[in-house]
Image (cartoon, rainbow, N blue to C red; front, side, top):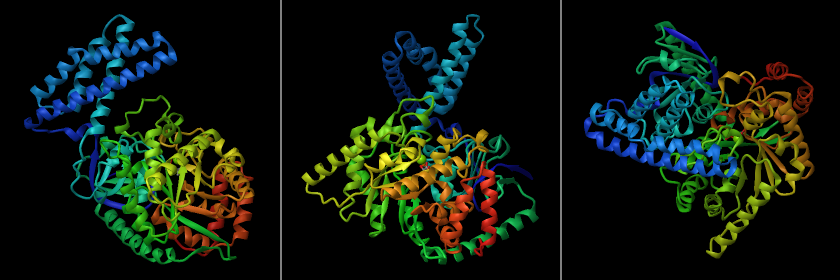
Length: 572
Ligand code: PEP
Ligand code: MG
């Protein structure tokens, strides 16, 4: 038995066989009959990589001059050099390797030749070759087929990006444990949305666990136990059963409205990313959808979907909601959510780069087709549109213009479009501080504390080395939330909160006290949020929020809030 501690990011207990997800392992053990397929895959990936390098060269020429752009010429030469490509082909043909493994081996062989050279310039080429090898690998993985996971398993991985999780059948996922990541990295959000436990930030996990090992993921305490002793296994099985009973009991609370004991009402929305989650949202008592992350609807596609395909996908969600309100967020691509089929430039700082609304405004054709797909589904006016990663008022003005154009075009086609409210995510300090300026241009706000915390505390939300700094209850974040609510309400605008803070037990009374209008959370958390709100008064929550804003550290806020929670009657 081995036990390792990490960061618990989705509560619950999972017990099952491990499936160790290693990207390059996806292709291990292919038969000779696949040789031609592997060669074809390699050639396609090589072509795409060349195209990408060519684009980078053009950009570098424009922005940095000829000297800097020359490096990309060198990269193109390597990609065209038979010394490299023939080696890859030889590994595939003669050793029966997958395209991925052949690329890794060939890049390693050639890098080794450069590494021992005297000349510093030539030595540095080893780095370029490894980099190019990785770029080809990325292309190969973006196009690789479904992960072959046939039985329900616990997914063990170094890192799980959205492009990885879309390849795994959801019904076969019992839980997650990864080496990298934090509370708001993709894998954690997905785990909470699915209601499966997750623990992240466990060093060397993929080296310790083997495929088929029996694993317990304890998403309460952040433990991963490999091949547990019988009595421990028994205790965890009992805890799992208790959890199941508790969840059933919670569902009843979900059906009740979220009203404080002194009569203040809050809306509770659901955060969803795909059609199957709508059922969970309704079952657990959602008043509507507070955040639909549309990027998940296009993530798995090999080709970017057409307007019609997007409209059909959205229809599956919107039709199931009957007339309940839904906030559809336009694509939040970039950051840790790359989309292989869009062939985006590689960036040094993707979280500060071409992400969210910035990307949409740079690809107006795609943006408008997404807007039209959304608007086609709004004949009755219950669909709202929200832009992510906004930092400038100009972005909203420009985006709204495109919405107007989309509406005009649809009307000319004879499509009925109901009144569509437009809002923004408040997830950059700029948007938070300038909320009154934004209020002139939007109908509502939704605070995305995952990013707001990341950008306020300058802490990468996906990096386990700085996970201890990431806390959405830090007073700096709370001050921004308080400012947004106050200023937005002065202008008569609605404010929701859709970051993970809204399902954090310690944070819920504080958000109530700050008088946000809505809390939007992963469906399974809805009953808990309602239960807490129904157990407190707005008056005491307001006093708690006032004190929290005076604290100096996130820890002090948590201590304060835990004391408050302990005193209320709600048991969970
Ligand atoms: C957020 O940033 O808080 C948010 C809800 O958006 P996402 O987690 O999708 O970036
Ligand atoms: Mg965000």
